[in-house]
Image 1 (tube, rainbow, N blue to C red):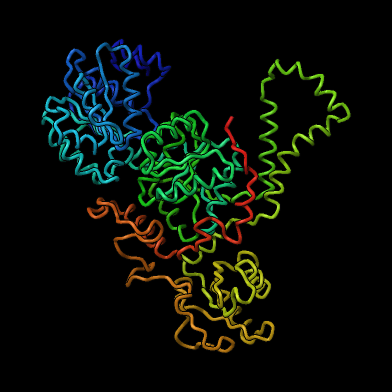
Image 2 (tube, rainbow, N blue to C red):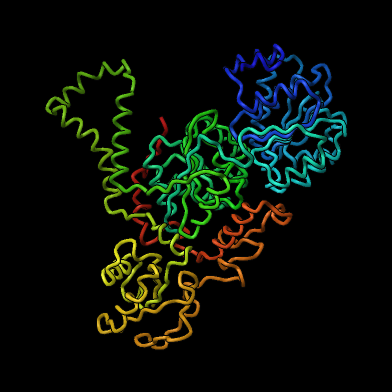
Length: 639
């Protein structure tokens, strides 16, 4: 099907030709003819990047009266960026429609100027919910003659707590107006809006409800909490042509990660709510122009990102809501292109990966964080391809004789080695002493199945152990190998570790009468096996430990009575200082999403508070990588 077959008027077809659109997307094929032919409400579900703006924009422009200056169409969008994006696209669509004006209304800009723009005659207003409510209270906008109201990204607006704003706006519009609701997912709150404010709406679904984009692959990497940032850098180094959006949960984490990347020489920028509108505009302009290679953003700020050819979405931290992950991954793989969604997780978050797989119907592939050798190889071949694809600038001919004179004693092989040694030496020196960041996710799965035993051992950092040295010591003692010992947690005077339950008797027997440098080493099973790190009340062996107290230092986990996994409650704690669950959660969500949220809440409660060094990303294990980045003093640009 072509756009000519959709029933659009000539001015709109001319604009489509100017924009270079060739064939309508699936949502456009389904929605445009229906909205032109019938005066009825509509609910349309389609993933981000499938052309929803054109799906409602073309019918809206065709149906309004261009000769009237009254406001006939209102488009509500969740963020300033998306509001501006829709406005710009609508203006392009209306390029050949004489007299049509589209005005953007959003916070952070002069409200009086926006009111003047509308008063000059604006048939279509694109607004964020908060600013629209403000203008309605001040009587700066008249929507009493509204014919069409479009809710774009409805699920995200409700996720952000705009339910009351939206219902208040809709309540002040004419009852006979038409309402078109566009969304990527269909949570209960979107259904409530449809039932309350729409009459027998036409329903269009492209794909399945709450389904992620089909052309996006999902990969996850299991690391220790303190190694998240190092993992991010290695993933970037292993993908030299990466053009990505990196998602963090909080504004503070977003700014911190972006600053660290810039300090380490990467081309990065931050996008979050604490930036002024001018700052946000500058960041987005740089990102669209490819001057920024990695955009670190919060979920709210990223709603307005509509940039082509994003290669990767990186989940630096998993979101609180299942729909949010769908929106994140929808930033890549747009317009029929492929994309990759990368997830950096800890062992305690493995359950969430399984839940995402089940709810989204997508397979998440576990990958390994690349080591220095792999990264160096990738970077060398990237440089080789870059040289091979570089167009020769004829102006260089003037300098060729002198260059040849300088290099006359160097053979072709030596020249190649010298050119590539620049890149090779940089990465080789940086990564030659780097550690393996990958964590054993198999151990986490075994703990979940109950086939894991947790032990207490009375040695720790005071005995010159760290978690790596202790793991090596335990591997040598037990002969269980690399994957046989896991979840090693080294404290000052004692530590914890896990093995499969089948090895329990062997481990306990080996340390029955074991001494290290004349000191008795005691190993005991903790209460709850793979769960809480508390020794059994019976048969406590204290020899070799004296009366050393473990209160306040143990690796204990909070438990809520009766819950299978030790988790219950309606608040999520942990990183970010504790946050309230969104209003929608109190009203009830789907079973799958509720499970996801409960796990997120519990996982964050169970994580220990990071030290000041870990919060800064400079732990004893990782400081060498941070302080000696191969990009120090050099900003990297995407070709």
